Each structure stands twice: as C-alpha cells, then as structure tokens.
Image (tube, rainbow, N blue to C red; front, side, top):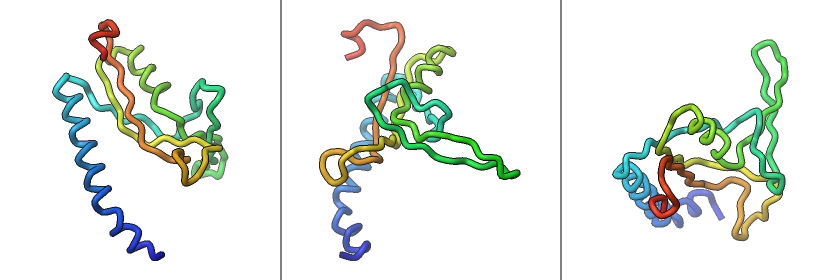
Length: 126
C-alpha cells in the first residue's frame, strides 16, 4: 500500500480529528483556561513507575552528550507551572510510552489532553 493511498484513505478521519480538537480548545478557552505548551524532551520524565519511558541522546555543539527522555505526559511540567502561580491550564500534546502494543489500542506515540483548575472542588472541576 502506498503512503499516498494511506493518507487519502484517512482524510475524513483527519478532518474530524481537527474539528474535535478545535471544539475542545474552544471549550477550555470559554472557561478562561490558558493553553500551555510543555517540552517533549525532558531531563526527568515523570514519576509513574508503571510507564516505560523512551530515552534520547542529545549533543551540544562541542559533542558533549546529554541524556533526555520523551515525556509520558505533560503532568510533571504542568504541576510545576501550577506551583509557580498558573491557575487554569490545559495542554493538547504528543506523549510517548515505550513497551506499548503496536496496532492494537495502544501506540508508542499518541495525543493527550491534560488540564488543571485551581481553587475549586471536584464538582466544579467536573
């Protein structure tokens, strides 16, 4: 199967996905949430012991190597943002998890939405 056929076959799905994400953003914007962008490559990937992380090697201009990780979710960075004074925030981003099954219901790369609202109880949050 050619790549062109694969893309054209999924055109309707991609258009639907775009429409859904647009409405998700509008929902949060209408509630005065700020959309934030978090780094995909981080030094510390998260605290979930049950998730397998993907490591990446990064080099600076002198060739010195550094170890990084593709984040498993934006949670860690977003919680640091909350601690520094942000209030209502959301993120729609790519996440990465190793040791996931390919082709089934899981993929190693996927899109996640995560949001946090401060100063409210669970009923207002829902």
